[in-house]
Length: 322
Image (cartoon, rainbow, N blue to C red; front, side, top):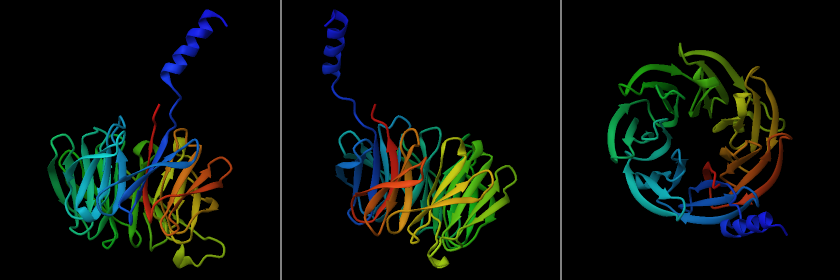
């Protein structure tokens, strides 16, 4: 063995084995988060949270995990290295979903029971604003440039457009029944909203807030009432959207250029939300009723494995560890 190879071996021993990336999943009924190793596709840790955890997201540097503990009326801040709850943030009642502003400071939180969106400064731990929106707000999104935040209201059936400079509404747009999730796409030029009971995805032009397209879903052998779009995520380049269709137990694959549904993938029961791994080669879906996570190979659009987690998994977030 050469001197160089000996030195390299010593460094490898000191450094230890490379750590795998992780998918973090909130479990509504267990008041826990499960941590999945993206290499072994196994649960490696479980941490306790507040009551009924749903929305979940990381700070930009992944040093802090934010959790909507809905029945605790708090957003909890966890150290993901230890699982310790560091503190709670004021959130308003029944926080369900939220989104972290690109400034990595402000959280926009949907308060389902109060018909408001609460804006919290994560550094000062104080409420910056509370914005009146429609009845039963749930979905939250923020544009890549940070200028616009979106709240969807399930009962009012609207997407509410918020100017993040003034923290005021500047537009309201109708969508189909019970909007659940929103995402910006195409560099922020589009805004997509899923409507659970309406069974559709609506695409808006961000500049004009006008509707560009609407997508419908038909799953063979499944009654239309069970085809309920909720969470969705975009592939690299926003070429396709993978859409959770709730109690239909399928994920739809939508071409984001043509708005055609190209495929349906069978997953677990009552699929809610999802998260990609680092290179977006695999997708992890949370299946509430079956209490598991389905791993999908994005290239082949095939389900690879089901991973048992806690009861009623809801939200999912990716965390790199290298």
